[in-house]
Length: 345
Ligand SMILES: NC(=O)c1ccc[n+]([C@@H]2O[C@H](COP(=O)([O-])OP(=O)(O)OC[C@H]3O[C@@H](n4cnc5c(N)ncnc54)[C@H](OP(=O)(O)O)[C@@H]3O)[C@@H](O)[C@H]2O)c1
Image (cartoon, rainbow, N blue to C red; front, top):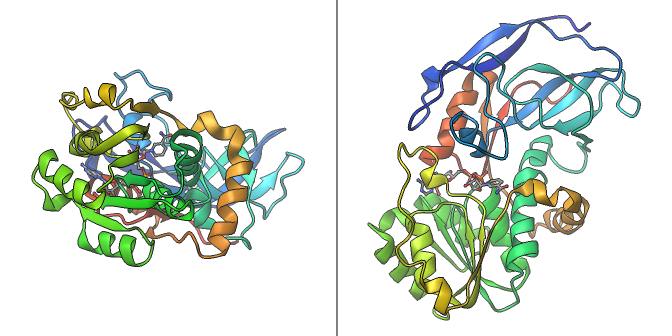
């Protein structure tokens, strides 16, 4: 059995509105021990993701069960195997799995676990560009939007973990890319480093009409493809500018996740009819069987520097709640990750 104390973060109450740090508590827990067919893992990096907010609404039916208040929170993590009773996993191996977030140690059965190579990319990248957000971006672009060279893609939440990969895949496919993000620094990075054609700071626009005007200028032939991460005024602006035969990949609507009441839908949905627009919502797990295809396309682009990424790194489990809340304030830039333990033992 591993020596030392394990720790985990618990939710003390379900947030209403924007989550508060006081609703999260770091507690000591017993160091877990393993049985047959199990391994003990030590979390190195954990991911904070917007979908976790949905797991804090026990009253809303979802594709994933709500968090329980009396159990440690969970989520994606890169971990190191410490002890193993599973063939194929040895102490020292690095793995990504769905159980290791928000805690220092945990027991894995290895069923939703993948080994990762620390020599191929920094370990934290397996939670971002080479992980779930990267697969989400790739699936939305290649399986739903299917952009052709010369078409225009509009991406909301463009400086984030998913959006930044969407933008760069769009450029790699020869498209004009118009991005929206929430600060001058993010827009500068999108235009000067990630290579998008125009980045709009949506905070410069008071309403959907103003944003649509700027979008129409940036996309003079219309928006052929819209990758939706934000909802609200972004969706309305995209619907104003959508081209005939446009496609929309509905990935997320983060502007609504902390709403206390449901927002009315966009008033211009009717544009979809006359313009023959296709909209498809999706969850990344639908495309789990395409993970290899994704890696074969994105890993070389990453190695060639054709895809770059930003990370907001937080240190220690004590700051995990701050990292999570930062998803909703725009404080994070790129993929938000929390270092839970050292990169190697
Ligand atoms: N369908 C799926 O399977 C799937 C999988 C992964 C993620 N998603 C969704 O994809 C979206 C992006 O996820 P991510 O992991 O890449 O997160 P992220 O973009 O790395 O982080 C969230 C960012 O969203 C922006 N944001 C937050 N509140 C906003 C608001 N009210 N209005 C406009 N922008 C706001 C902030 O950037 P700014 O500074 O630009 O405001 C923030 O940094 C989310 O909606 C998420 O739920 C869906």
